[in-house]
Length: 77
Image: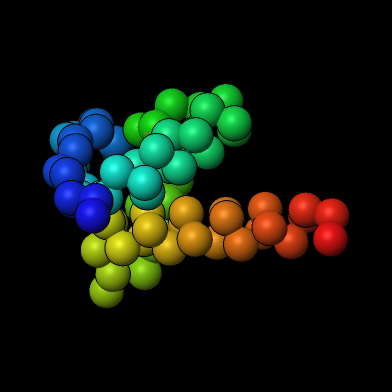
């Protein structure tokens, strides 16, 4: 079982927080690293594009899911 942890970053000049399970957090930080950007920059990008009816935490999870699905499609079968 993976517990949800609350984390904070500064985006657009203010602190904001999100809650993610450890596996999602590990993947999102890995994505940021692979894109050669800070976690805060990636969170800001996702925040800018998310549906305002959705929470930032949900938007981050959906981004991770999409990234993993696309990576799976690139793997040779």
